[in-house]
Amino acid sequence: MGRFIMKIGVLTSSRADYGIYLPLLNKLKNDSFFQLEIIAFGTHLSKSHGYTLTEIEKKGYHCIHAISSLISNDDEQSIATSYGLTVLKFADFWKINKYDLVFCLGDRFEMSAAVQAGIPFGVNFAHIHGGETTLGAIDNIYRHQITLSSKLHLTATDVFTNKIVQLNNSKEGVFTVGSLSIEDIKNFIPIDKSIFYKKFNIPNQEFALITFHPETIESNHNILFAIEMRKALAKIATKLFLIITMPNADTMGSIFRAEIEILKNLLPKQVLCIENFGKENYFSAMFYSKIMIGNTSSGIIEAASFNKYVINVGNRQKGRIQNNNILNAAFNKEDIIEKTFIALNLGVYSGKNIYYKERAADNIIEILKRYEEF
Image (cartoon, rainbow, N blue to C red; front, side, top):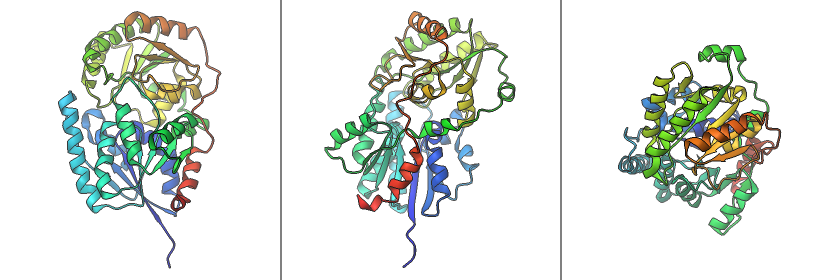
């Protein structure tokens, strides 16, 4: 009887989840126990979001499946249509592609659609970053949908593990492994500062790293929120250079893009817009930044490990456990500016990161090799 090889699929729908997966992907790729296949879809295949499939292809994976399912608009009807199209595409995919286990991560609507399509086919899903709460985004619903569809659950903290146990009414298959994205930070060596600044034409001054996404629960307020963001950033730009990473394909994301483009046109020498940084560049930007501003999960989960204070704006991340480096601001100009200037006077954050747990990727590998036990 031949040696068992576990066939693993990894669903990745965006630059964000792919960057989080990387420590695990490197171990799966180099371990002969596993046969790894990448299943890339969502914004990876969107030219307006940087067509990040090319970044995956450069890594030399043995097998990459590319599934195109997003439509270009981002209003509510278009998002719902993209969800349905993703389900249709993955119905065909799951019919002919079989795996021992398929990884899914986070809470994106297209990730939820790919997972929901797999339920009738009995696909065994392993969910990373389940059990978390983001009350300002409909992603909260998608995340719990994915949790309920998964057999294996790999969480960042014990709090999230307990949440999944409550959702499933069972402890079976639920493990606290820590945050994968933070694992790379411990040994991360940033790009040399002069090289990094030259690469992106960043002036020799302190900068804020900024990422804003729409609030998909209060979608009718996003026009006002985006304008308040632009006005606040225009004021902050008198003190700091601004590096802005562009929004993902969320409902009303184009509204924020439009306001960011207005800001860029008004202050071309103080604003840099980045469509796709890639993990090494993004981590280097976090390392060299003075502060972070926005409503992205990286500010909640990763920034503390870079000793950065974060202005967390609005309700998108409301409900997530926060480290002591977070200053919460309402989605209005005055509060964003006030909290930013407070953070600038705080210096370097020296507290702990509650999302960190040693050997997150190794913990997952060990669990996978015991997979048939549970």
